[in-house]
Image 1 (spheres, rainbow, N blue to C red):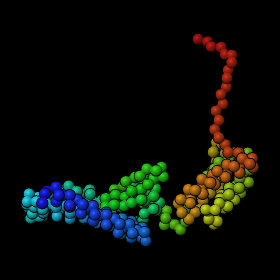
Image 2 (image 1 turned 60 degrees about the horizontal axis):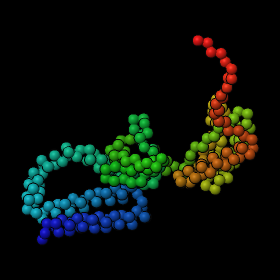
Image 3 (image 1 turned 135 degrees about the vertical axis):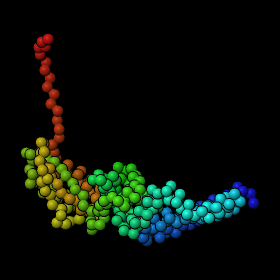
Image 4 (image 1 turned 60 degrees about the vertical axis):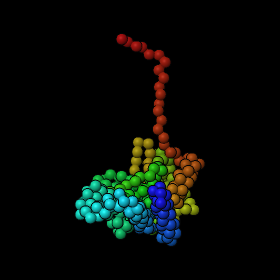
Length: 265
């Protein structure tokens, strides 16, 4: 059989088997969209590729002799492979650890902190054999190695029953502070996506040069609901404050025009 035909057959076989594997895991993920299934799928894809490549190597005398020699020198092969792929193996082992400990799942909101700094924050979209994909709130996808994820401090807000999002607004000192707090609380509770709980209280967070900062927590069932609710509430707050004479301070720049002046050298 022609060499190119053999290669083509094995490539087609790999693509077909991986396609079947992906379809099976896709069907399973509809019932259980867990990070474990995605990780196992990645491992399965890699195993299929290794098996197909090894089978292809057995079809030719040159590659067959090479693979036979490598297998006979298994200790040396393992040592070389371990040294060359040390970081890759670390990511795989960390991926297994993450899959077992389950600190996060697909479509959950997490914050990843390493060395006191936030290196990623957003929604988990995928986990592979080597890395975790996080879609950040600015739209960018952050690809974090599993070894980093395993060693980092992870805050998972989905471990709470509901999603809470802080909402702040500043009003001028000469405004009706009590009326503004009541208005803010009323709008938050009235929104169709917010949960009417005792946590929907408005507090005075602090003072600035221009006014008083009011703060509340908007509670919703999901993260998407939280974004939508906060956006709507901010719009309604501005409209309600303007209607009721509650001023929202903003910075101004005073420009003084001096018509006549003496210039002495």
